[in-house]
Image 1 (cartoon, helix red, strand yellow):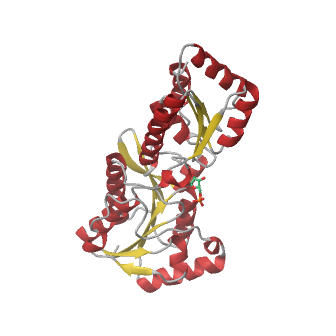
Image 2 (cartoon, helix red, strand yellow):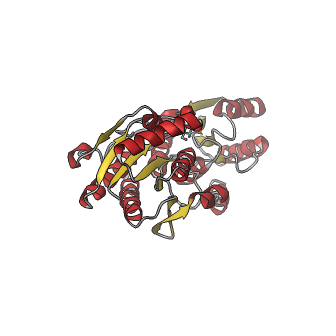
Image 3 (cartoon, rainbow, N blue to C red):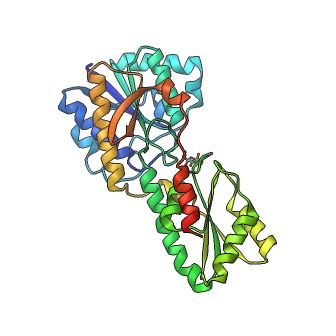
Length: 319
Ligand code: F6P
């Protein structure tokens, strides 16, 4: 192992920069050459890599986004794109690649692995939808951003005694909605993992209003329904006004939490360690308090656990 390349791919997530920093500094510590590829797999096809130094990653640990930029690359799905990427990696003399991103990015890493480059995937997505890891980089920050939004909405919701439906990201999963809903004390949490019954949501609202609740917050995961649709359904059933908020890409930005920075630093360091041990083809995960790597196939074939106990608890606590 002499030269490593690092790239970020797919949707950005707060903490990606902390992971890049750890990869770069750990590589230099071990006297490896480290190259940063711009715009994910597209950068491999379009020859967009530069050699990184210690100073290249100064002052980024606290910044959201990714200094390497990111992209989703349809061209890398084609054989032609993959051959171009391989030729470029060979030209640079790259012996291993670290891919920071989500499930789709790991599939790209697996293709590179198949072409003879040892790769390590670092899970980074606010959706937290990757199996074999309790946490993906960016999830904790996104959840805290949602909680901050809920706190602010609560103030005005209480003043006006209003109902709010807040839509959060998560693609086709409800991990953000569940954790933010539990921590934010939402009255109802609507997620794609569980079917929702609008009458039950309305009954909950009525029970709360009856015992003097001044406001109600319903958290809606984008994969389950739109907040507008839920708001409309409640309005039709209860003849009450519902204000709708879509948090959208706000959830992807901002300074990463301490948790995400530490997770990213540990994973970045571990990725370099594994390549130095000649281990590739692994997606990193954080489970039982430790960072470890599992084969991509195992991750793809496992199902991300939904925290059903927390889902039930959130329902009980918001009774
Ligand atoms: O995967 C991260 C994510 O933010 C999802 O939560 C969301 O559904 C999607 O990306 C949005 O993608 P885009 O940035 O392309 O609009």
